[in-house]
Amino acid sequence: MFKNIEEIEKKYNLIINKIICDEKIVLSIFNSLEIKEEEYDLNDSNILVIIGLYYLKVKKDNKNAKKYYLMAIEKGKGNANAMNNLGNLYYREKDYKNAKKYFLMSIEKGNEFAMNNLGIIYKIEKDNGNAKKYYLMAIENGSMSAMENIKRIMSEVELYEKLKEMENKNEIIRDEIKRLSRLKIIKDYENKFE
Image 1: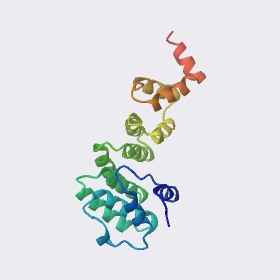
Image 2: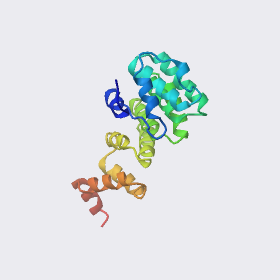
Image 3: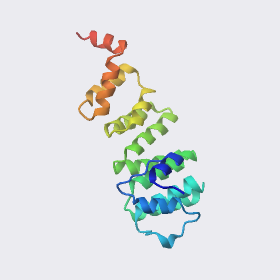
Image 4: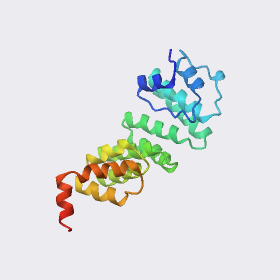
């Protein structure tokens, strides 16, 4: 029996948005042996997303997870979390065409996780230009994962230049610029222009 959302997040390696998800409902769903639809408001897209997560993580039932994510997208007039989760499900199934479709839909709603996830697909497909584009977009929106991912495809100098352009956007970028500027390669690069 889970006592709080943090236990669920830890066990299933999830991030559950506690602002939009009622903890009692999340606990009720994840502590259930079986989901009884009549117990939940199936017009609430956030509840549908949690039920989808339950089927995906607890029951290992991709078919029902997809069903609830699609319901959440329909009922929630485009629930960005449902779109991103569905994209992830297709990604795990190596159906990159559908994964891209749902990540792009989620990106249109501003979901930084989808931005990073789409970058990952482009990296797998060896399209580093698009991978960089979506990683940078995610970084601008505060994604630490994207910061780590972009380091794998950009040289330190290239990354430093790009982050300098975006410097005023957020603290994550400023911290990374400080770290990079301590590297000898960046010092040498900057000295060329002095």
